[in-house]
Image (tube, rainbow over all chains, first blue to last red; front, side):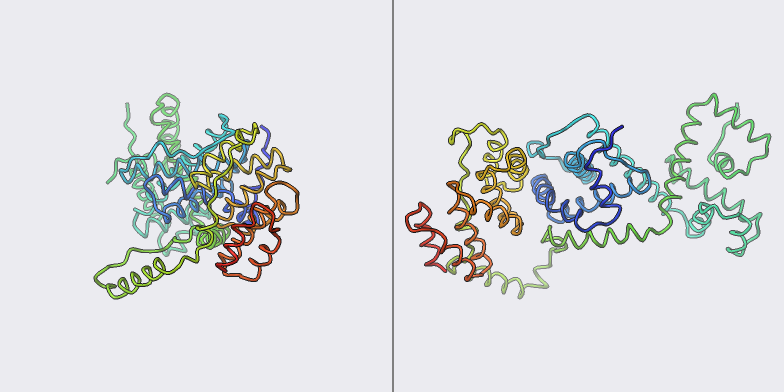
Length: 185
Length: 239
């Protein structure tokens, strides 16, 4: 699949490149602000959504090697729009459908890429939230286990026996699985 | 048929099952799509934790940068509703200040002089679809929405001083002064009918910043016999 020249925006986010980031704000901040403030949101909501969308795109690029096969403008605006509609849903508010963001160059790949970013990042946030529900000890055990270090070493570091560590780790993971599957409260 | 609970899945993913238990569980995964999907879901979750639990200084730096940009571009971000009771005196004082601002002769030059109607391309005999869309927003003072269409019009025809002129005005209204001036200077340096209007709006921009010297500098460029001369004279009087 051909990478779109607008991949430079994604690369700019990965490098925390001031020029690129400034360009993104100049081109899109006012439009997102207008869209959100006309759709039951405030200036603060617009600022939060704008920032979080850029972070989501960064995360998808950093962790999942997101590569842009469509223009950045409709892709970014759709990510923001979708994220704001999700937020309105959470708040129980209705979107004002007549106030749409005007978009052009809308190909199938634009929708697919934007949906993927929002869905994947929502899923990642849910996973992190489930993890945060675990007790402190469980979080520490799982966090260290996921680093790939030898289990014996981790047990030693935590000052527990190897047997206890293995047992506790399975218990913690089991609780986490329950949270993920929604059958552990 | 054995029922595998969360603990069994956890032991499988931790490599804690005996070889016999593991073989049996893997056989089951082959035939039980629901169980296989659950295991896949947990695997993905663990991948996410593996990626995101370690601190990422790069992401933190980006967040700090975006926060700063947010303050610049979403100016009211961070304001909070304050208690009227607790801050009653402050609220009264603020109200007095607002009254003074409202009752005082207006110094908001951009509001007073910066609002103009965009001539639609049909009226000028043009065919640009981008400019038509831009003018619909521009004339409703939706400058942020007009801007993308003006950008497209300029991209399609960089010699269009009409598109550059209205883009300059729209940029002024959304606070991008640097870009606004760049466009208006370009228009002024040309020979289109927007030449002296561009000079006038350069003056309005500086007047709005209380930069009288530069405002007068641009007003001086408007000849007395031009159609812009009358309002230039009025602005000069106000300055």
